[in-house]
Amino acid sequence: MQRLRSELNETHAIIYARVSSKQQVTEGHGLESQEHRCRQYAEQNGYLVEAIFKDDISGAARERDGMGALLDYVEKNALQKYVVIIDDLKRFARDLKVHLVLRGILRKLGVELRSPNFNFDDSPEGELSENITACMAEYERKSNRRQVIQKQKARLESGYWTFDFPPGLMFQKTHFHGKILVPDPEKMDVVIRLFEGFDTGKFITQADCTRYLRSVGFYHRRLPKKQYQQQVRRILTNPLYAGYLELPQWGVPLMKAAHDGIIPKDLFDRVQRKLKYQDRHTPKFRRGYRNNEFPLRGDLLCKYCGTSMTGSFNTGRNGPVANYHCKNQNCPYKGKSNNRDLTHSRFLDYLAQIRATNDIIELTKAIALDAFNTKKNMLDLEGNSLKTKLEKLEEAKSQLMAKYRITNNPILIKELEYEIEKVVNEMNGLKDNLEEQKEEFEQIDIGTALTEILEFVRDPANAWSSGDYQKKKAVTALVFEVPPTYERENGIGTATLSPLFELMQTLKTGNVQQVEVRGIEPLFSYFLKEVSPKTAQVAYWNSPKIRTKKRKPPPHVQCHHLRRTR
Image 1 (cartoon, rainbow, N blue to C red):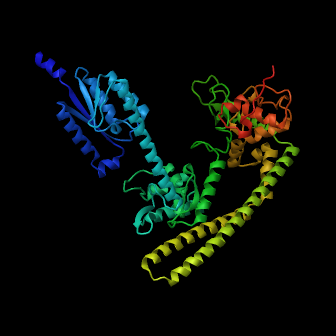
Image 2 (image 1 turned 120 degrees about the horizontal axis):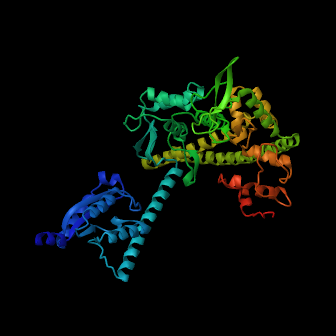
Image 3 (image 1 turned 45 degrees about the vertical axis):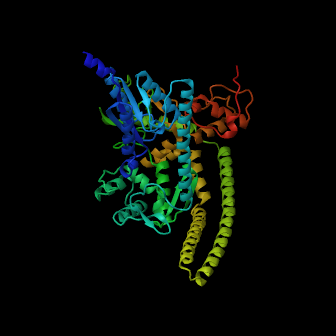
């Protein structure tokens, strides 16, 4: 019994070591050196080392596998007295909040913290010193992070990619460039065929691209892995393959990179336009839902449960009858049929009510033409600026070439070659920008485009009734932000219109105090005594329907407030 008591009274030690990344574990000896110093400290103070826990994660993280295992270990052996030995306070945490939280947990468990490089003291002066040291550790971490980001950003702005290389490319160290992206001979051809196939229509959807990658056994980093559409999307939208780079979150715009692309820039741009078009215009329906007989399948919601309604043929006295119905097993409206033709007729009547007037169409056309011409003028000015820069670069190139011809110094020759290459790359980037601007406006027929769009806005019912299945799905996706509800007795119920048609309805009424067309809820929960265009904007963004969607209004609207009318 006395022996058991003496063992419980004896202080046992637990060593905790941490490095910031897995790379430091494989390439360094930080964990081993920390453990060695902690063992020396335990031996000098007569502590018996019972367990060792290690982490390879940032000190700013609170959730750590090693620290969690340490706390679990102490809780399981609650009768034993422990001290936790760390090599330095920075190894414990590099964030003041995390430090205080972990220290509080250890205190509740009755565990003391020890270090060969810091003297822990529970006095007010000791706590002050500990907190100041923890603050300094957090400052050093943030300062180091800022310096790393600044260096990486400078490298990016020089045209060099500093993060992981994408599949189809690889890093290669060179004398002048350092690490630079070069084509991966094993995977380059697959990536090129992927871009070309999507551009030419061989692969119609991203799912087709995914199946192609799986069929050729494509993988990244020598690890056979099943490819998904997210990976295809990342490949098709990565400008590195075209010899360009960008990082918007760091303020690095799309720019010419130092490495050569494996596909032409115009091919990459065509793929981006195609992806953007698919994102905006591809009807949203689930697999197996494409049935020309039921174009509203998935675009109507049951009024009682909010479930998307489906369609099917039911057996009637005179043959098959097409009906829409709710498929929710728990819905009281389940199984009640809605005649397809009657549903389509009611839907067309609803669309006919939200058509825009001729005055609104003409106003919209004038605004669109004005915006187009303004943008064109701005791009013309930008093009002139690019031409001026191009002339200056051409002059700088001529001067460098003149120096290159007369020098015999090998070191100077290499430096001049690097400068010439840099100037040439910048010139190529400016030329590409000029060509893109020219192609953008040469390919746009603003008159035809506006006519087609405004005809759709003028009469969405006609566009839906005269279109094929694909067009009908596109019309419903463009008109409604949330599908309308439907019931057999009253037909089409409340729907959330897309911002374009909601604005059209606001302009059409002319005064928000007037009652909207049948089937559309009032746009505002309260009305204004006097309505000006500016006040109407504020009312729109302050309406409960818009606020629940968490949309952000323009800056000039946020500073205004509305008064409720009693």
